[in-house]
Image (cartoon, rainbow, N blue to C red; front, side, top):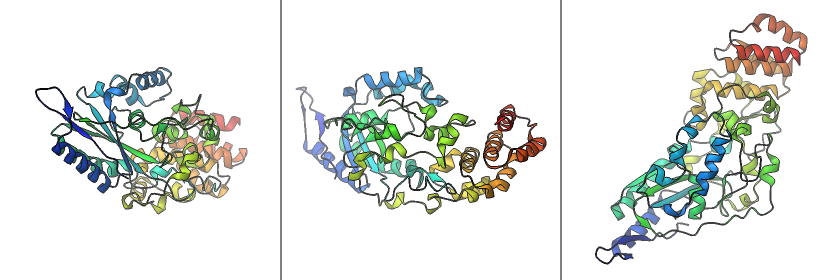
Length: 395
């Protein structure tokens, strides 16, 4: 249900701020456009109310190195601390949420080790391509109603959407650091419109996590050093999507068959029971993302990969990272029928793929077979791949 938006304009002469007929018209127009655009929820925050605490937490996250090799976070850390550090004239933030709640259990493929598990958010069209045009529609309506400048954001600029969403009342940042909504659980894409217009703010949402720690306890790699704090370097979503190099050995077995993202901490949130499954046509589930066979994925070359996952977030990660992830899943599969497909990848042009292939084979073939393969491939030109052979033969 679309909320009521109150737009305020300043009358010249007396310094007072009162609604006008045109502002009331704009309020109705924006609410109508938000609903017509298909957003699940929209709330308003006053930018100046955000305070400094989210920025301090973010800088602590960076200082501790918990962002891993996401250098883009560190490069714009100062601007990311507060919306006004990026746009000094921003007064109000319209925060919009679009539900992508799944109809089926997102963890249902984890025990089917011949198949791959793909995160719910990536199992459909890239949300950037869906949310941004809708945001622009609402932003145009707002600008027309107020005459003030607007800027739209969909996870592509130095803006902390989740603290703004909590301030606006969409939900609260749960112990897994993601936004939780009483109506939509942990399944909301977020978009933000910043504007110079002064718009009456909604009340912030309080934390409803209570003593629950299901999201913390289920994490396969213990990526939460404390409630409300994430170490991305241990997070499977980071390791399979953002991280470009070899996946650290200590996490490979725990990754299981998760080849793109991880939904464990989101899926166990009790507030998901109130979420209605998304039936947005633009966010329809792609059949090829539903437990694809690992054997089929190992056979994909770059062209086939791009064609199969066109328009999804998976394609943005690229073929090399994708194959690295699939090989980790293959190594965890116990399926010796995959060995010929994996052996073919020992000659892949990317060292990170060759190295992952070595590890996968070490989990599936006898030591004598690994020794034979090492004689042919062990003297790799890349040091990281040679290290994989050394580790494989020593195990």
